[in-house]
Image (cartoon, rainbow, N blue to C red; front, side, top):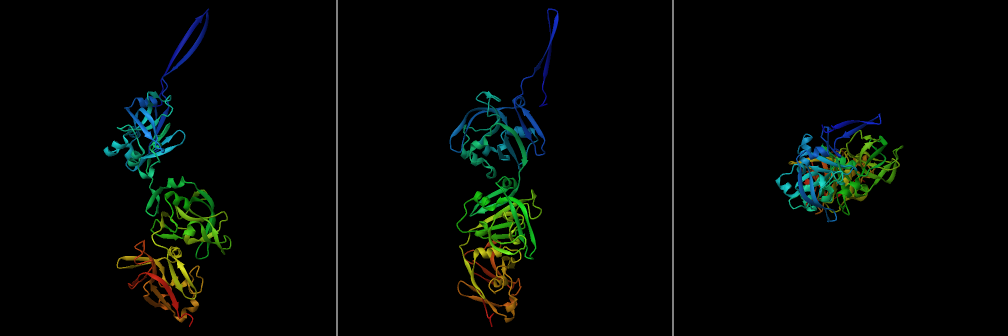
Length: 482
């Protein structure tokens, strides 16, 4: 019915001086005016002309809006149809759905169910949302901004404060004026996308849908990794968003931090600040040999070769650069759903005294504790301690390959002692014969999934037989050279 047009045909035959001149005049019905299309969640379109809208129940009211510079614009009387009525005409919407209003130039805004069907408290602030076809007596197409979204409040002013009070934070624009979309061409009803990624920086939290992430500026580069077995994966061409761009979109990064990526299964991977900024130990993509520190972009990838990534998705951490250099496989965290900037503890170091003597920083500990080959947990009286086996820390100072925590088997037979000290100078002693390759002794950095606090931290020694030894600051190995 919306597309029907009435035509009238008048045939005039005029006889002049015996000569018949035949003229055919087609009289078309009144111009139905510009159209707006309402699209439901099943992609079924309903197209409405100006004539259609004028035939519906109309609403008239005076209003204006505030822009981002705090100026008031749009003073005048608006006539139109409630957006809720247009949505109902297309089959309605549920509370889990949103509408996307699109202008003829492609500009879009999203509005929640509560804006389309406001309750009394929201309506008292935002007023009725209409699709206006008339402004101060001028009707589209002469009304050049129409069709336009307008909010008709009782006080005649849609302020930025009103907008903040009545919009979903996920879709909130920078000003009220951003919601007053002009030249509306389409209103689409969509199922509200779920949050794909949550980012937290010192209590500032922001959720991103898949669409949000894919609408951010992306990079395309090469990346691959080396498994602990030595197997090389890649390099392949990936597309994704620089993690730094995501973090900086969320909030301000502290001067000193680590980054925690949480997977859908709860698994946590920790990156040092230097790694977050792109500095990683790298390997040659052909030989797998170490090539030292190399600059990468730590990236949240979603495409491989132009298609969704085949494994570890929909979003996965990756290290990308133009050369396709490799990094360690455990850094490529799968199914990432959270990014948390860890700024909850002061920088600390774990003193290591063995065949080699050095201090392990908190960045380095959190990074190794994120590796699936090292990370382990022990539950004591209902509380879960998570960290790395004590023998992994020993491997960092026993003279073998400390970079990859390879255990030095050549000195095991001396049955040297391992002494763990806390900040009060107290200690617990074990022998390597008990600790070797045993998951029953761990140095923990997390308690019940949260970083161990300052009172008991930074590290706790936990054993399968129930020992909890807090505030660990030093681990030494003695008698290995006998």
